Length: 247
Image (cartoon, rainbow, N blue to C red):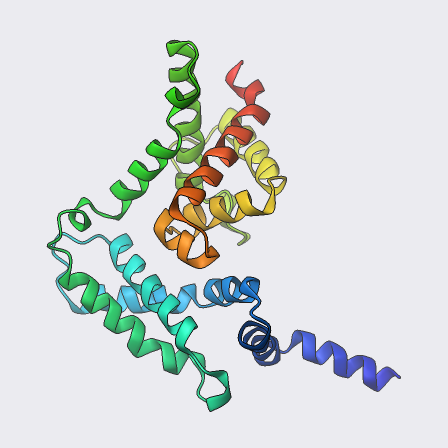
């Protein structure tokens, strides 16, 4: 009995077996949750290839975030085309495809929309998502709500508050202070209490740096739905953190 128990634990703790299980459930049970887990697992690979491209080439007007987005595009394509039954490691299968989409993406950078840059596109997405005028009401109150919503975004972007590594909350930044740290702690608590769909959007957008379009691809939702979930999550956080605003 003990040997059987140890075998079961070995299966759960062995990364290769865990990954094999994820691929099996994705391919033969169409479990989309496994696709998202695999995507998140291979984000470091995509980022490393983007960084390698940046070191080897003159990126011109491209930002590192742009290269990451192209790498994520290639990662998604590789996830959808990979056949685990062929015995080839996924990383070996994905590397040339990710590198290819980075090169192709750079070739498309002359497109006006792409020239906006990664960070500017993400900020525009957020601002459009958070449009307070959609609900009417007092103009000054709308402006105050928008300012508070954007402040939440700044906290998420600049502090690493939702990262899981132990050193994330010790990262130095110009906003450090007792009130700011208290707000960070409260925000982290409330993020953990968000509905799963909203939490995924917040984490992918702020922690992994994904645009709404990429999150939509990962979660198999429309871009409009991602925008709605982002808005709903930020509004929920604003409501729960209102006591900081009233100080």
